[in-house]
Amino acid sequence: MTPLKEAFNPASNSIGFLRWFLAFVVIFSHAGPLAGFYGGHDLGTQFSTEQSLGGVAVAGFFFLSGYLITKSRMGRSSTIRFFWRRIMRIFPAWLLVLLLTAYVLAPVAWNQEHGTMEGFWDAKTDSPFTYFSNNMWLPLIQHNIAGMGKIIPFFTLNGGYEWNGSAWTLAFEFTAYILVGVLGMVGALSNRLVGSIIAGGIIGVAMMQWFGFGTLTNLAPVFADYRFLLLMAPFAFGILFALHDDKIMIDNRLAIVCAFIAVWTYGKGGWLVFGQYAFCYVIMWFAIKVQFLRNWDKHGDFSYGIYIVAWPLMQFAAYFRLQEAGWIVYHVVIVVACHAYAYLSWHLIERPALQLKDWTPRWGAWLLHRTHDIRMRVFGALDPTYPGRVAARSAKASRTLEGAAR
Image (tube, rainbow, N blue to C red):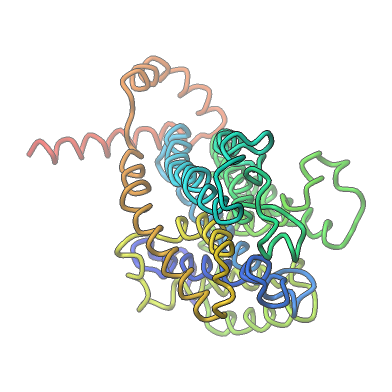
């Protein structure tokens, strides 16, 4: 057995493949309500009363994110830099898909549905012009555009309108980023006991939710939305993996046991209480052990682009009755279209945005310089390791500049 800290190599793992694979599990799952396959229901709900396979994939996403984001926050980046990098990762691609949906996909679909553009641009409710502004901050406030969608399977089978039913998770993901940022700022990530109590508390409250213990809204209003704990629990499990990577052992035998637990609880019950955590261990084991997939994302990280564009493309395809061509043709077309979009999104939007992760405007540099002493006192009192981390960042920056000068 090898501790996770020694076994996990940030430069050599299969997380790129896992995120890509999980994104496509979500697509296959949503083909039920969006295209009418699987009896019109999400794939997996035919076997499990607790979660669809798409939900399983999202739990995997949040676990990996919890681990990676926490390790990033425990590094040398400042709080401001941490949030700036998270913004650059999430928002540029999200804003692009909103523009694509409102001004390309929706008008073409409207014309297909109505045979004219009359009534689209001047729609009195759910205007295409407000779709961007209402949703740009991640929470989905406007779900539909111009009241369209009555002829496609999602409405006929589910009675709903939704142009991007996958994207609801983004607001919760950024909320999780805020949690990690705050934990790092107050020193909870440098004190494993405090960090573990908080992360373990989230998982404990989530278990209370699934067992039906009491009214959790009395504890905090945020618990009124069951989805909060649904996603925060696997994210918190990722935080625990980051905090205790020197104690968590990566072992083939344990991975087999966890795989059995995950499959059993998914079909028989107990997935949300126990099974999803066993599943999280398996995917971490997979990321470490399956090294032949370590270069899967060498041409780009397409998982995010695929995830946020898949639902709009699938809904768009439904207006042209692609689902009537059959399961195989439908999925091949959707997979190719998602890859094409994700490739362009990565190389034209996401990667250029990430290249700005270390950019600091002049006014920001001036403000950081002027507030240096007070920040050292305030944050040093909260987190004794803060001054050392700042000094390490400064030393690294100096070495980089010296190397460039040579």
